[in-house]
Length: 216
Image 1: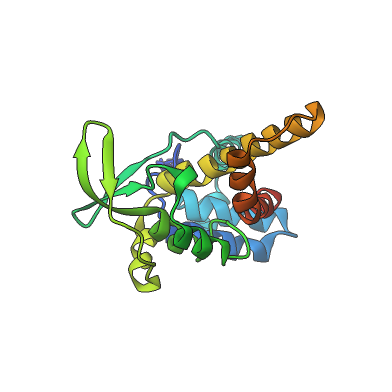
Image 2: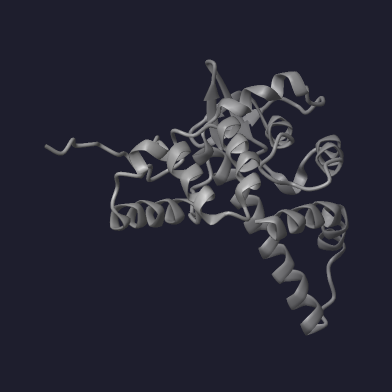
């Protein structure tokens, strides 16, 4: 008599924290040259399928599960979450990124690149600050006074659907800004002083986001 096994394949990242995601990414690097080992690693970490279980599954089942996992890992469409509650505190994304505090800009620029690693919680701590006033969809957040690496650790426990929504939002900003620059150069249009100043200030951040895109 065959024993039935229920296997749950995740369809989103809501159950995976940033901490676990980083651990998976780091461990997965060890198996990058061994496709079978990489598949076994993903099956265990995402679906709880041990080698003992995997060996009793037919090739079609394994193939279907791995295809579902690939679809999950290639997903990039996440709606930006501008607000989030952590430990009873409501945090809001910097309301106007075009007027981000210069101190926040400098702190973000201090990172070599923007990627989903152990520096990412620090960036979240800079961009998301406690909401002080709210009316409808509008809100105000605390002034930026610097970030604490100790306090930033709380972002490690936040699920990846939130982190991906923020991360890909910034990649989208980079792509739109880059297209605007290229179109301006192509059409040989005069760039207004305000836009020129913004581009100059954003230069380092654009490069950081470019580095992240290359890593992806």
